[in-house]
Amino acid sequence: NAGVTQTPKFRILKIGQSMTLQCTQDMNHNYMYWYRQDPGMGLKLIYYSVGAGITDKGEVPNGYNVSRSTTEDFPLRLELAAPSQTSVYFCASSSGGGTEAFFGQGTRLTVV
Amino acid sequence: QKEVEQDPGPLSVPEGAIVSLNCTYSNSAFQYFMWYRQYSRKGPELLMYTYSSGNKEDGRFTAQVDKSSKYISLFIRDSQPSDSATYLCAMGGRTGGGNKLTFGTGTQLKVEL
Image (cartoon, rainbow over all chains, first blue to last red; front, side, top):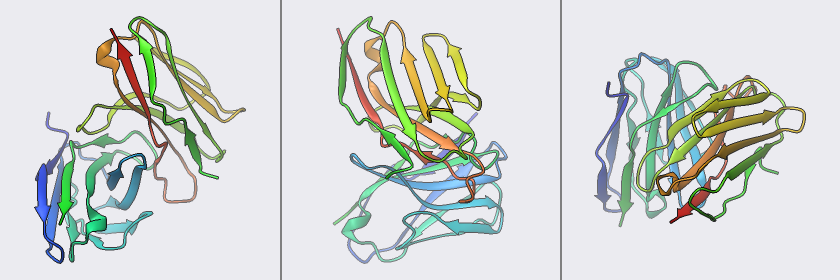
């Protein structure tokens, strides 16, 4: 009964480095989402996917890329890390658009 | 104007108090309404989900939706220190924006002994 699993839990990156945040879900959900959460700012949608092979931008997509080759996995790629990308990143999934979403435990990323 | 407005708090109450958390929204296309609880350094956890006006009760928690006033509430009865967390409202539906959820910024609640 894993739900949504994110790895890693913590990461420190240097400016200009790249990394991939992993997300996998075992609920056979079509919809998957990536959010970032900054103090006092709520959850901002970065990218989302409505099914394998289909992705779309959210509110704050700049500096990020995603892919969705399977129903289960939705990795988020940071190509050239910047201090502005220091944040907590959450992956979520849902069975339908706009319905209840289930979240992973987050990845805390610091860019120095 | 934000689509979803939520008082950020912080809200501090004594143990046993009734807590009222609220959100207002502007998009009448929202059909689904949720409350999430988020403990420090954890992911948001779904607490309540409803898609109609009226009340929904689950133990000490009651979610209330008033679509005519575009207002939702979460009531916590007999509040406990373990209820101390940030509470996020969320809304979704066929909004024309890809059917995504829109979140409030969260209300920080502290229940004191």
